[in-house]
Image (cartoon, rainbow, N blue to C red):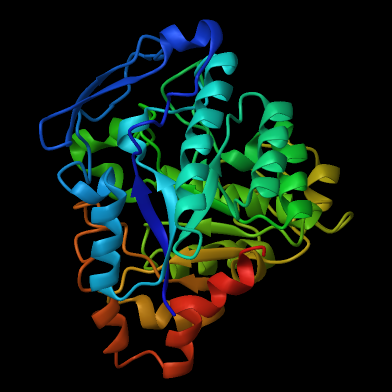
Length: 390
């Protein structure tokens, strides 16, 4: 069996179920004579100066399988893939956490109702991931409770947290108001799938450096958000929470783990201070070391209560990654944190770098000389089956 853990879909009735005053503000899509997405109008869109939204149709808009389920399933039969996790077509839905809560809650539920219809029509082939509006945490919790009861098996979130205040996205782990949501997701046994969403904050923390090519030194915003789940203490509070990081490859894993684990053992020094005391240290031992008062934003006591384990521990236990089969570093990454943390994915129907190999991914994994047959089986389906609730 093969389960595809990163696919995208845009049902035509995605927002047909938005009701009441919000109905006048929902997105309206435009399709051509071949049922291809060519544009949209969104009266309720929240636009922020300085952001970089993509124009329609977005990645995948040239494939019938984006909207047409019959064409989609035919493609999957040719690919030899048995099940697929449905994620929104993010560049088309323009869904983000900066929308008015009332509209966002209705849009999320309307999308989920549309997906539920498809799940009921093809129960053996489709796996639903529920969309939520995180700006309204109580409603988001109610939505995943409804979704779990309706047969959804995962939750779909943006990799970052867009805000109204500025064009720079923020990290998920830094928003403590989300803790009750993460707690309920853990209790329900529903993994959280993180994916870049078209929210107008694309590469926002890199753009200021791009003029002189300094963006290569800037951590990607998704990686910062991912690490925040570890450094904020989230996985200490919710040790059974599972988070899938999609469409990012695996080359970044080793350098991130090495850097963060080194900081866990030995504190980096702030040489701008005369006494050269540590400006950041997860395992500060009271009485033997201290944080620089000039740099500290968080109390020593708060640091002491977080991060009971090095970052590598959370990468091997709580974090999972969809694979890019053509990536040279894939085998090394599997050797570093274990095949148990990787999931098969095609990024269907996208033509961006993550989805360009979608018609070869099955073959590339099958023929990969650096991955054992046992590990290939884990990646194809066993890891996904162990993760997804019944």
